[in-house]
Image (cartoon, rainbow, N blue to C red; front, side):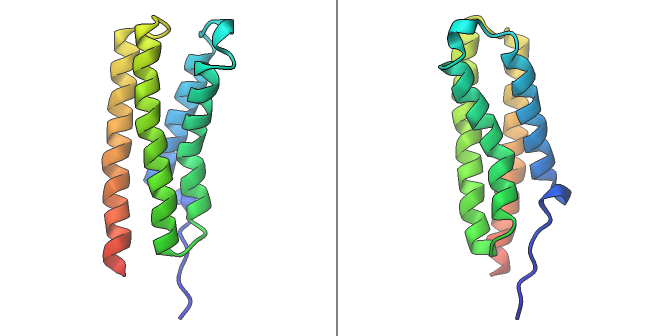
Amino acid sequence: MVKKRHNYKNLKIWKLGLEICNDISDLLQNFPNHEKYDLSSQMNRCSISIPSNIAEGSARTDKSFSHFIDISLGSSFELGTQLLVANHRKYINNETLENSENKLAEFQRMTMGFQNSLKNKN
């Protein structure tokens, strides 16, 4: 029996992950230049990892896909911490922090639900 693969472009979690990634890219435009190779770079890599791991995992079996989702989730939690650091350093305001945290929380809820559905299929 051939297992069906997921089309990542149709997944709501991938779409939201890409939106988060693009939001972060826009935010980083306003960060100071001295952060270019530190916090900015770290946040950029984390945010890119979120939709990228969903896309990469979608070509795998459900069990393997679940592992890539774990990586994506880990990156989302890491990004949440980095947003708190950025807020503390006054690179982003409280409203931006709250909006970003809300979007990350929504992503995490949806992604954990999706991951549970993968596990329940097996």
